[in-house]
Image 1: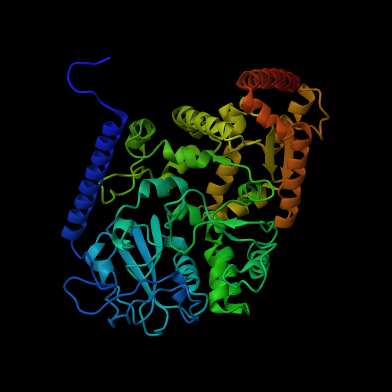
Image 2 (image 1 turned 90 degrees about the vertical axis):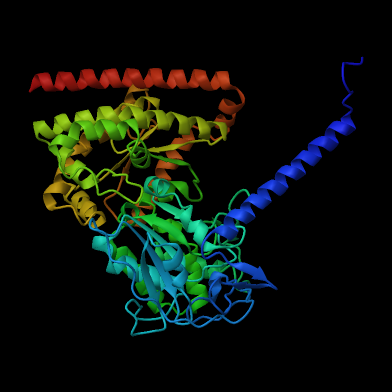
Length: 564
């Protein structure tokens, strides 16, 4: 049938769409070229070299394996000899409220780092020169490539770290930079600090392909393939992280450039970083090998022990961290942030930190913690109000994350929630695992080791605010009795005792997972995924059992109190 006007055949329509796509592509390329060429300090490409506008000489494309004192393994792609440049003067002074964000740079005398000052004036710079013992910032021993610089910075500044840190190499143009021209400036300028505050650690290597490369196989790689460091990684990992199972596969982006928040670094005590540096100093491995082991281990240093065990092989369970979500829902501009500022602000002068470069004032968490942690009536009231602000928003984020992992077919998901019972989220859990310490003094010591700013009183208040551990243990085990399971061997309530070392903790975690799998086999998750009505029915049944257990527990506690 003919319509008024022309007839659109398949061929003519496809041709027009192709021409339109080509036109859009050319316009985007032209726009990108125009904006990048007009930006200050942009490099121009001529005959395979990279020349800096307004300066003479050339720079290199470089892999991270040229690092400090070790020989290249052939991955570097040197275009011409690097230009000589003096090390710039020390970075700008800290702002009135202290250093907010810092670039921690590993460099050598021959490196030109002026691009950091020309293009990134809003960042403080801590530039280490590893082969100059007279430099303002250097290392005692030039070993382990950039890892020695990074660890030295963390150890020396542990008690007064800035809010955010980017650990980077000294060269502006490197093949692994997340930019079409391999330029480090736009990569840093685009970096999202709010996301770093929420997550804690971010690898700066963002490959434009799906998934993470399986770079190292500690159990199967041979020593003939030195680039992948398999057997060396196995032994190094055991020394660096005693008690943590060596993974079968290490799948993480390369190149030892990353961002990290202060709170994430302090999740580990200073002594851990000192132990890592001591390993670097004492190992018989050469620079390339020891540096590569650290390169593929940085992401592990930021995980809590139990989360690391559960998310690593052989368990590989996804983690939903309530602390991370709690930070997300109170970021500046959110409803949670406004509610906290309105209620606690008038009576807490230091509730907000000094404005950042965007004019935003984040919450001062230690100040807020002093208002809500403790067992006095006033603090209990404030804590209740804070929980009413934060918990509903966190709960909604948890539900969205659970749906995401359900659709991906995961057989189990871990909710890492310190106040699981208090928030009422235990009713949606098939199993509750309580990680407990029998000695409160040990728990307080671990808190102070992780957060040096805490006083003994602060640590004691936090432990008391989390409730009686023994009461939580009893409540978790009671879930087994309510569902007619063996009290100590049921899967609805499992206890992991954390009184020993990391080896003992790993055994406890393995035992807990084995108990859960005996009552919830992995194939069951696929049944729930492929038959959504079955999944809904199972969820309703699970919540009904948990509600019944909760009601029975409350009646039991009420009777026991009546006897007193």
